Image 1 (cartoon, rainbow, N blue to C red):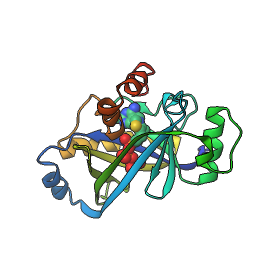
Image 2 (cartoon, protein in one colour; image 1 turned 180 degrees about the vertical axis):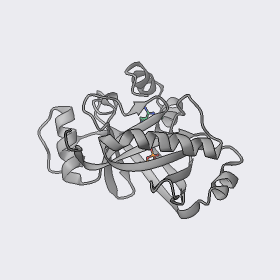
Image 3 (tube, protein in one colour; image 1 turned 135 degrees about the vertical axis):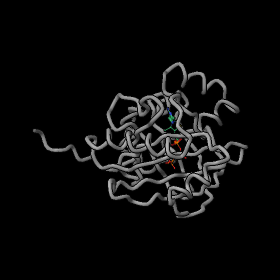
Image 4 (tube, rainbow, N blue to C red; image 1 turned 90 degrees about the horizontal axis):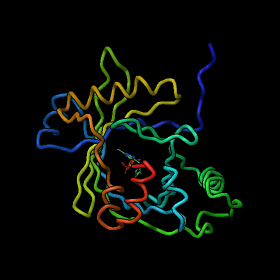
Length: 214
Ligand code: V4E
């Protein structure tokens, strides 16, 4: 048997949900604890020909930090059914390398030098809950309840794993928690960025739909 393939960063396995009126009561019933309440601005960037997002690469500035979300396997999409799996790079050097590779340009000294355009910017108020570990499962599960400043609310259940081999179990876990919270749906739920684009940048949104990125 081949050894597990270790990756440079964790894989975020997530499932989004529409937060109904009972979600907080159900979180409480499952023993969830409020970990933090934070507010942050995300600004997303792409090249003029949309060379990042059309390949499912999401470069953002969250507060003062750069972050890049991309599918764990090259050429693949990060969404499978209604769940998603993305790796997140937070080191500026790693982001520079990955973005320059994707855009087919030499690696500049800093991200600003790519000359990218901001295509979405919004503020999110996030309440993050953590579910207790149980006797049967020591998987850490986090639930975020987000409210964006353009009048959009979304929830997500998230498990972080280190290897591709762990993704299958993580997918089962997020589904199970969505069911326990009474928010499970078979069909994908659109997130903040997609909704922002649908409202504000219909052309970009249409291109992403046509490329099966969203
Ligand atoms: C990956 C992605 C986008 C980037 C934003 O990712 P998202 O998880 O929606 O944002 P957020 O604020 O919850 O990030 P976190 O704090 O958890 O790191 S925009 C579109 N995608 C692709 C995508 C997709 N195709 N389908 C679904 C259901 N979600 C995202």
